[in-house]
Image 1 (cartoon, one colour):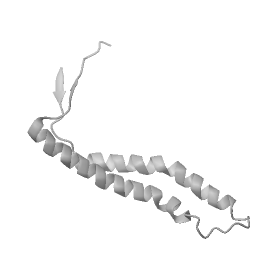
Image 2 (cartoon, helix red, strand yellow):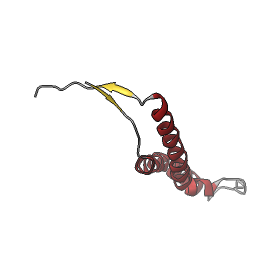
Image 3 (cartoon, helix red, strand yellow):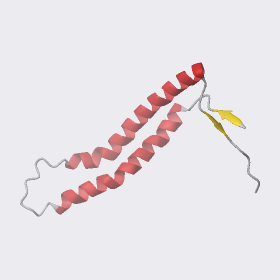
Image 4 (cartoon, one colour):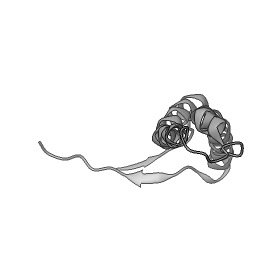
Length: 95
């Protein structure tokens, strides 16, 4: 059976994607914060160490992921109205 996606809910899709992006970047942010904490006792100059980027990276990725995904969903919906949406074939399986 052929199914065509005619429209994508931009808010719901963007909300889910932004949470996923924030969760995906969280381990890297934790590693960066731990790396900063391990250098606290050393004599190195940490003035140039980007500590705050590791704290704000999950938030930044979430917000920017939401904005860009919402834009891409809007573009998809405009294109799908004119040319048709993504098509895929499904098949029912016996249990």
